[in-house]
Amino acid sequence: MATPLVVSEVFKSFTMHLRDRIKLPVVNDVSFSVASGECVVLGGPSGIGKSSILKMLYGNYAVDAGQILVSHKDRLVDIASADPRTTIDVRRHTLGYVSQFLRTVPRVAALDVVAEPLVARGIQAPEAKVKASDLLARLNLPRELWSLPPATFSGGEQQRVNIARGFITSHSILLLDEPTASLDAVNRRVVVDMIAEKKREGVALLGIFHDEEVREAVADRILDVTRFSPRKAAA
Amino acid sequence: MSNPDNQELQAATDTPLLKVSGVSKFYGSRIGCKDVSFELWPGEVLAIVGESGSGKTTLLNCLSTRLMPTTGSVEYRMRDGNFRDLYHMSEAERRFLMRTDWGFVHQNPADGLRMTVSAGANVGERLMAVGDRHYGNIRATANDWLTRVEIGTDRIDDQPRAFSGGMRQRLQIARNLVTSPRLVFMDEPTGGLDVSVQARLLDLVRGLVNDLGLSAIVVTHDLAVARLLSHRMMVMKDGHVIEHGLTDRVLDDPREPYTQLLVSSILQV
Image (cartoon, rainbow over the protein chains, first blue to last red):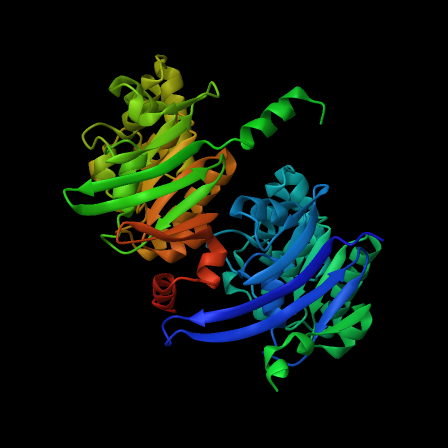
């Protein structure tokens, strides 16, 4: 089976220059891989570095050492050392990310927020909007909100816009940072179904889910992040 | 993939539009900017951030040939695909480039507009510079652009003197984009505007840059503007580029002491 994501010996720390250059280790020696059609869930208590790992894989956080290899357009790209232009191309075509919070842009309607990743890949706006409408309808976002900018939406509504935006493309790798945190039971089940569909399509998924029921439903295996924690190594 | 047009397009996006190497500008013994090198690709938006006096406007002026650097070179890929060294062009060639293939959006719209001719003429003037002579076409295009920047077409015959700050800035943007430039320089495009006007302008610029596939270099001291508009970011301090990378990486995981200070100084609303 294809393995589109391989993480190898990644180290990460923060140096706080404004706080007497304190060095805060985040994770040490992170190595794992995710296969196509598999959903791997990062486990472990809060503050252990789960979100940081996702952010490094997405190129949002820099890494101190190691490699993050992504299969992108028939070649391997190391996100840890890629230039900004390559990272942007990988994000546009290969690597999707559903964050916990939606970063809203003033004045852009929810439907356009969702359609944007498709338009960025060169799909015509009307076609992208049809697909965006399908997803928002499936996630039970009231139709009267579609033409409004999501800035004033409730937490759960914003999160559904965010999920639709993340799931609209056919990226081969999808990173999910607690996508169901502020959803009710009905919509959680919709997301669980959507994840199952992605798996059947051969997408490699890596996620953080605090909700046990969702985790049980989607996880093929759980990767305990505690073993990468520098604090454990020190003890 | 066998389509030759596609291959050509691919080749065009695989070549930088602008190659900057070792650009320095000294004012006597004082440093304006020192040893700046980078490449800009088609469709890419680069933000240059830093506090006042960090050299970002000096750098922008050097890149856009409004100022001659002390040392260094800037090569630009012309429409025929050949690179030309900007500092070795004739004045006439540079002026032509500025009027057609480039745009420059000033912080103060009065610096980029002619305040005593009508809004329509401000937009039409750039079209005439590229050889358009048909009055009807020029007026129709001007109308179209005023609509795109959300200025009512009933204002086409008014002078920008009669416009608000936000309208003037939108008119300046229309004037710059009407000739379909490939590269736009912006110096604090939202400076001095109310926040609500700022948001509208940012959204407009963002949309236009996406739709037209422009490359842009935006100087700003506002990190929120950089986050919204740019793909890539350069942080300047005392004339030097101290940090450079993907915009969200620089803002969410700043590495240099000065960048950490900048990011931690943002006021939360």
